Amino acid sequence: MVSKTEETQLNRLENQVDNGGGGAWEYLCLVRKLKVRRSEKVLKYGLSILNDSRKRSALGPEEWTLYEQVAIAAMDCQCLDVAKDCIKVLQKKFPESKRVGRLNGMLLEAKGSWAEAEKAYSSLLEDNPLDQVIHKRRVAMAKAQGNISGAIELLNKYLEIFMADHEAWRELAEIYISLQMYKQAAFCYEELILSQPTVPMHHLAYADVLYTLSGLENLQTAKKYYASTIDLTGGKNTRALFGICLCTSAIAQVSKGRNKEDKESPELHSLAATALEKDYKQRASDKLGLLTSALRSLKT
Image 1: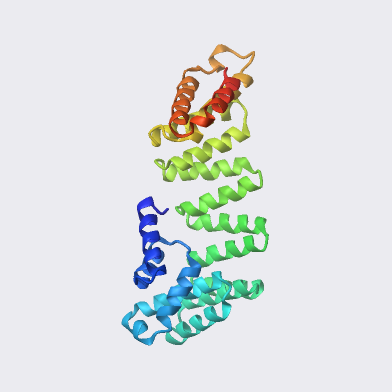
Image 2 (image 1 turned 60 degrees about the horizontal axis):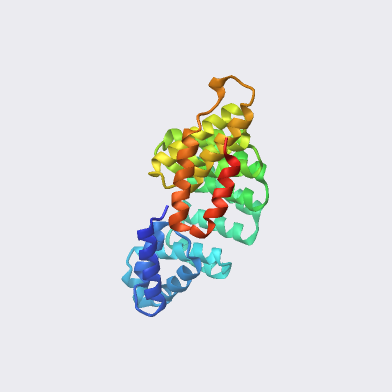
């Protein structure tokens, strides 16, 4: 994830290059380092360097890195002839390279030649079954074709091998949520919380899924994870504060007629509501009345 400082630095450098102030190579390096997609800019400024023999030769070995970066950007922009030319240069320089082989597979994807791309990727996986990039390309290809069940199957197989890949767990969870498979999504977020217990967004997403599943036990657990999100963010997560209020109200409805021990204390709800009102007074005072009305309707 790109920090605000890094994003500011990137935007400042981009404006500098856009306005003719130089720094194209530094900009391209920063885009690559931060792993962000600025494909049109990368294509424009990358080609300005590659098409100038003096600038290109000054890069040394980094020239080949730039060819790869421009090839991927060109595919993003559907400039497939440019991508093809870049890959040809790389293939000539590195005829046995699996990395260039991946680029060829990506070019086939960009052309919509799914069967050929799958064949190319399968061949590369035979040589190196632990190539994470190719596994992920196959998932992306399944999603691009609308084969969501295939994407789920491939992601599950991938995670059997690469269990520590947080991005893959999050992607799988999001797919499950899109299909309303909330129990499966909850399992994914449990894995993420186990491996990254201090990341508040995992706690928040898990709480959202449990609240959606409903039922007394799920609601009580959701409330705990909304509370942990608030704790991890120093009380500054508005969504989690709302979650506390919603859970408390829902638990009260579900617990009607039950034993006293099943009922929730309204104290946490009161604290969350007070924090929300304070936040709205500071940042959205014109909507304070709407908030007060909504919270009143949730009172237990």
